[in-house]
Length: 400
Image (tube, rainbow, N blue to C red; front, side):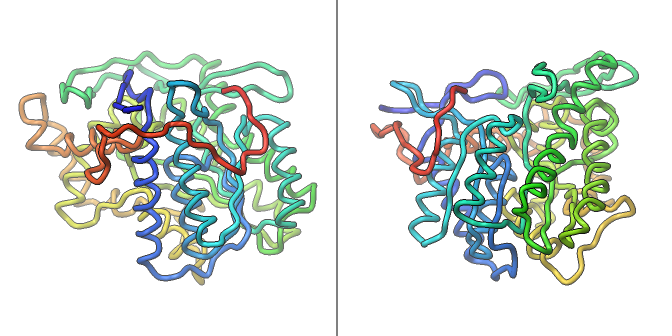
């Protein structure tokens, strides 16, 4: 069938298999053009189908020759409905990895569930024996708590006062003001349950208990801090409380991993166009301004450039540099004072009449659609294509 983009807000409801394959291929080619990484050999990536998780899986496979197991929750193609982008990304990744002789298997299901955790442990024992790295890269809107069976949702809200600021509809480039009421205590608590470190700790504790962690094991989870202008809704908001919990979990895991000489890290990454970040008020407009400034300075990076630098220069270098809170910072180019000063100046004057001059909003929009396999110049979007792409290694189908 012929696949065109259909979108609803910050979600594209269709995905293009050839475009997604192009996305994966371009990231692989970038990694192959860089120097080899003396990195991990057996890796579990939890949340491996899009964004930083996908780029992490590509980096360790094509940068250090790692065998990988990916866990994600994506929808397979059905009838005349396309699969999700993450499904097509994962199918393409496995195809390219297998062609080069790399081990790559995937598990599709709810990573928060005990069932998927157990299935993953069994696969590690069967095929890899032990793993030396776990990347935790989940960005989910809700979670079913294993201890109670209750499903709770995360929110993108401030915690103290009503937040009012500029935002943009990146489809129309219209800037408006948005006001967000503060989260309740219950909403904050639930956001921590979903986006904090609880599930990361459950995964690591289970893997440790089952004896599948190699000596010198590492684990990393991803976070974001960002500029002061987003702090009220992000770093000081409900999601920020979850990120605080994630960072405290890393400190706790560091103690628990001493018996395998292991380490747990939180990496603070740069603002990028991802499905998750597109949903956060203020962030798309900030990112569009940031992109323009960083490109002009020659310091812009996408997911794959960030992940290569994380693994090559931080996690698998002679010394892992961290900030005063023990976090790896690969957002240091974004947070440079000259960059943030210029963002602040533009933020004050930007509106719907000058947004195309003062920001990179058009490229932001294009990057959003590229997440779903659209707007790649080398892909013929008028061609009739096969949408029923399957992932050979999927062990068990689940309803999403």
